[in-house]
Image (tube, rainbow, N blue to C red; front, side):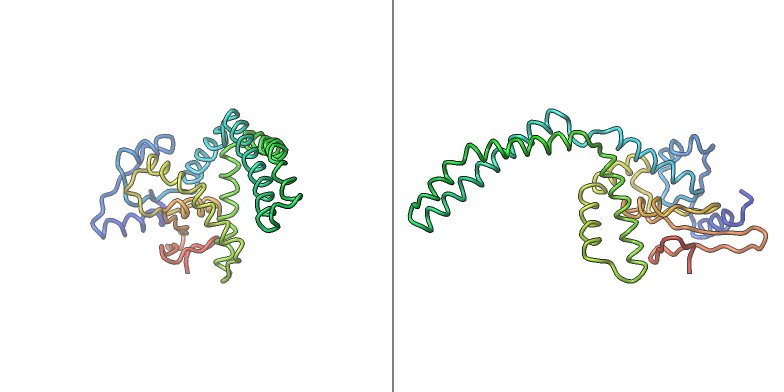
Length: 239
């Protein structure tokens, strides 16, 4: 509590009429957060890293799809797609050419298309069943880090923008709900100080709807600085 950064954060919050709550230690940090339901959190990076790592571990322990669902779903979707593709090609050819031999031949390939599509779909189902939600989690983090890095440089590529939008829909939409269960629905901002904050930790919270600001303080000189909430930039501690 003697660090200048912690003091400035405490003074700034109390000056606005906020009440302060201190945890009993890092082991009980999340329990204290659930009890107090804070609006702003200030902590060292280790605690934010721990929250992210727990989310990552849970994701890696959860299958992307169950094996029965992956196998059966892949086979059925593949078979239907194969049959429709073969039958549809035959129908189009018949309509355009007045029932030609090619159209009749293609229409007769429906069962073959179903078999081939089923085999391909089963293969994809087996592949999906071998993956975990953690693979999607790690992909989303890398995508977010790339997106904000490009944004900070002044230009986001179309590919990165599309991937980032997909990550938000496929991963962060669900993880945001999980974060609310861990931190409560009141948290609007977080402040980090005392050590360097990893970029992946920053983007994890940003894309889960929480502004995590990286800060810096030196008690020897009485200097502090922190990223403004509306101008976050990776790897910096403010303007």
